[in-house]
Image (cartoon, rainbow, N blue to C red; front, top):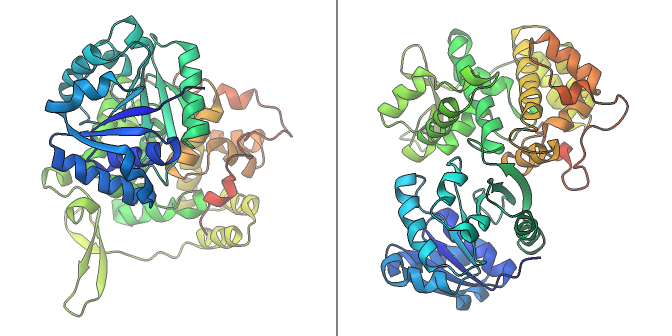
Length: 436
């Protein structure tokens, strides 16, 4: 296992930078150079790191500094340089050039990115530097969200990869998912496929409830704490656009067209309505004079905001009750057998989610346990393989996929009936991710 005593954090004042630093200092016991554009911002990052892990003991191991004055010195004495600057090649590549000149042989360098090419970023380094360069995609906030997508490229050394993975797992307490250097990696490729296609369906069914209806159909009984479109509002429509545009421009698979950004998303982005961070996007909350809060939802047809509606869809109520009663297979039986267009949509998206997750095995990840881990630990969504078991096994799942006209992945076709398909049960109880 890798021994890491000194770490440099670049971008220490950001939420991800300070949160990651807190985890590294608290769990890893490392000395951490906290670098930002200026020392005051770095000091703010230290305070945020301390707050994130709720212990003051790490403060003594954190050293504030600036890029201009301290980068080369800090990098030269570090075992790991963790770069979390802005998500663009224009910002990351010049920083990498400086790191490459200052790092010692054997020093790990990694970047946080939700989709930039790790192989391209690694080109700033010599052969040893490329062997030791990785994507370490932590999820926010790192203290609570334990997923780390460890992204490898063709220049990596397998022994270094194994040692770094063991350190992230055993020392930092990360749920490590190994992914290849492909657009958006595993979690975002799968998650944003579903979110973006649901957004298209919201437009298709705009006269029946649109955004609110889709989040009702894809609510907690389908294995997620937050509806897909509420999730898009939470992460920001601009971030959503950047991720799906990257996937659309750089991939070609059966789901390619589902990554095309819906026109109404672009309209909202152009108007500065980016989601929760801007006070509203797909939804907004208005505080009235009497202090009461009211939720509104964007009307795709009119461009206005309407009061958020309530729905009375019998099969959803029945499925939720089964979830509350801890009868997860019973809930899925209701979904499989329900009538009406809402049930057809639910079956379509559950099928799509399972199919797309499993189809990425071999391209994005080497095993389905990696896609399952990405979705379970990173998105808090019931993993695709667990859905297969809740639906009654491979045959029942394939039957639903075929009825929904969703491609059946080879992994599912080859699966043995009567054997559990989900294999992360000892690490993540998928039942806990359903919401009644």
